Length: 368
Image (cartoon, rainbow, N blue to C red; front, side, top):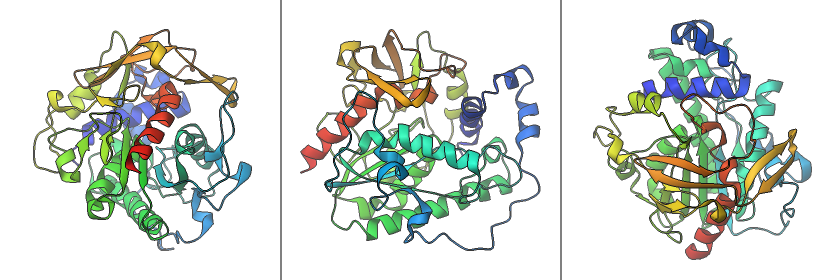
């Protein structure tokens, strides 16, 4: 896969975030690869594809109510979502949560740690869209993070296998939401799969896509977007467009990302270059936008744990600079997982939860 070097970096970050294993940097990438490589060779499970007509294969969907649906969670100082049917349907893909190395792909369910992390991501990220649409968040046999540390046939098969679940889930989502406007969102591994889905189901999305939020995954305006038949979002009311950003505090050192991303080949056959890296500021809803802290309606700030998290308005501003989203203002205490190079990848959604919510509502209103 052409983005392999970038995948290596991203999933080191995911490991650091979820496991807190910062010490890995003391030993270098080769030790990480050795310790994280899944055992044996890739073998597709023999139990066939998940049946996405069954609620058990979804983390969130409209039929799941109350506390059993993590997408209905709200910050402590935010009103609960209404139960009335929403206009849009939202398809959300969570990032990597399976950190074990006993297999190349996670089980669909049954691993308590991985399942709990996936619910946490739905709760803290997909919830931003719940005032605009009904959330559909599938369980999928995600590639284990170790699959992204290698350039091998096994690794490619594991990533493709994870995507095969998601495309089945998305087709069921389309079948059950015919004619409705659609919002798509994914983060990190979820962003990778979403970028592929946008290419493979471009005809079905024509005229129905409100916006696609490919967050924490770099896209090229020349090497990636044309294959999706989509434009970058250049105005706050534009529909049928793509938002993408990579969050960095200043002074930013994006060398690890750029070294891994630049020069790789996109699905259009064009080489990716720094000058073409897409940055859409979620505070302005515009490509290459800029906004001071007072324009931020709410950063999601934890209070011991997510259940007590609240929104803090006016704390964090941001501006796009040569493909990166650089943070301005006084960043609240979000947790210990800011990454080397002042990379705030972990908090791509939390920093702008209120703005993402407003952006989706504004674009949906324009779509109507």
